[in-house]
Amino acid sequence: MALVVMCGQPCSGKSVAAVTLSESLKESGTKQSVRIIDEASFHLDRNQNYANMPAEKNLRGKLRSDVDRSVSRGDIVIVDSLNSIKGYRYELWCIARAAGIRYCVVYCDVDEAHCRVWNKGRSDRGEASYEDGVFEDLVRRFEKPERRNRWDSPLFELYPSRDGIEKSSPVILEAVTYLTKTVDSKTQDVRVLQPSIATQAARFSEANSLYELDRATQEVINAVVEQQALGGAISRVTLGNELPPVEIRRPVGLPELRRLRRTFVKLMGQASLSGPQLPTDADSAKRRFVDYLNREFGGQ
Image (cartoon, rainbow, N blue to C red):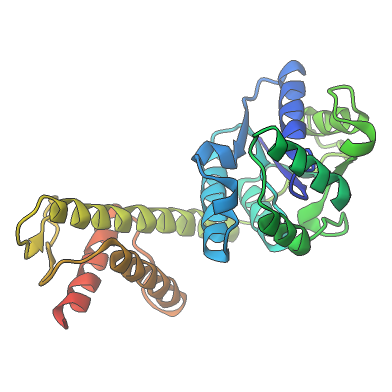
């Protein structure tokens, strides 16, 4: 298993590099599946993804969750996104460490001027491109990887504007060797991250709890919206599975429900630091969320 984090400015050739690396890995004869996780897989517009910080944070959360699920299946996972924030690359490194797998960063080093030209070219051809404001903001906030940082190491650097990107590129070949080389007690040039027992247990518990909490609260919101859409006066929303109903005294819109959901998730996260742990199953998460909604609606 391995996790490869692509990194670079917007329109620096990361997607081409990711596909090239993926094809080279498949042709290397590795028995592992190779999977690319990218923004397009979520069917989200790139300008909407980076229009503001909440949208960008939501995108990173989706990517991180998909990566966390994928590394446990034994694949070689390539994360094709900007991955421009060093704190986010650290989070991905932590996932790799907890899974006990290989990790590396592939950096497409292209100057801003070339990226700007390539972005304009895409726009002129009617292809997906960044709006000027979004592009400039991403360039301004980019945090270049440094090999001295453990979450940026090992670092494979490509120069697409100078050398192009080919399967025969020395850096691509070097990365393939690193990701597929058999490791034994004498191997010194390949590092497999080693988790501690505490790290593994904490990661498993937290990841599953957050996933269940996110999924369960969204299902409750969906139920409230759908049953209100049926028309007529509704005073309670049933959820089944012997769960308590959501008691509502007035029509509740989706924006308000989303606001309450965000507040609830934030409160749960804060409480888990010094109090009860997050729920580890969907029904428990739904009960807590329903109790919270009923307290909020009860005072109105």
